[in-house]
Every structure is written in C-alpha cells, then in structure tokens.
Image 1 (cartoon, rainbow, N blue to C red):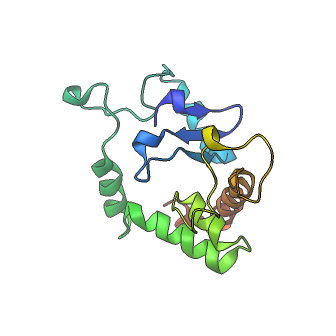
Image 2: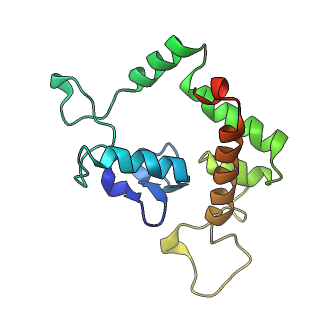
Amino acid sequence: MKWCQVDRAAGVWTMPPERMKAFREHRVPLTPRALGILDEMAHFGADPDAYVFPGQQRKKKGRPLSTMTMEMVLRRMVDVTVHGFRSSFRDWCGEESTFPREVAEAVLAHIVGDETERPLPARQRPREPTGYASSGVMPVADMNSVRAAGYCDSLPSSMASI
C-alpha cells in the first residue's frame, strides 16, 4: 500500500490494476479504525510514492514490509494465516450479514457472474444507463466492511486483539 493509493478524505484505498490478480482496479473502503491507523502512520511520513508500511531492514530500504513479517506475527500469536482473514471475512458475510453473495465476492476482489452481470470498467461505461451493473458495488461494500469491523470490535478483547 502506497500513500498515493489512499484517499483518506473519501475513506478509500484504490489498488491499481497491475497489482491485482484479475488486472482490474479494486477499491477498498476504509473503516474508521483503518483510517486511525493511517493517521498514526502518517506521523512517520506520507510521501505519495512511499509505502504506508515500509520495510525496516537496511537492505530493503524503499520496499514494503514483507508478507512474511505479518505471517510470523500471526504464528507467534495464534495458529492462523493471513489468508485466513479473507476466509473468515467470507464466512462472516455468509453467516452473519444479509449482503448478497456477489457483494461479498466483490469485496474480496473476486470476479463473479458472466459478462452481462459484471461491472464495466469506467472507460467502457456508456453515458446512458443500461441494464448492465455499471456502477460496481462500492457503496454496499463500504457498508459491509463497516459492519464487519463493528462485529470485530464487539468481540471480547482476547479475540479482537488478533
């Protein structure tokens, strides 16, 4: 995550297509807690081209914190994986929320449905509304993320500290 990808005023992190497996831009709504963490990190510098969570090793200067760093922290705390967070979120969506399956999948950047059901990339959207889902699911995804964050905040502190 680079600072130039974060719009704190709008509360959105935009992943560029070249960073995504499906080569499609992905917008991630930021919860109030996530925005608070970003505000704390901004005290260390918020150069637009810099990583929000930079690597700390001298030989990795200018590179992001490694994926292994998060994995090792989780291993030391409890027996979970980084991918387990995505799986847990998907389970929560199916078991605890009322959001449609398509919204849960879109939040995880999964492509669902056939070509007539998928949102069109912005540059291909017609000026007049059509029967296609051209607007994406950002407003609903935002509500889903905020509800999931609220659910996590309601857990006993021994569980939520993970």
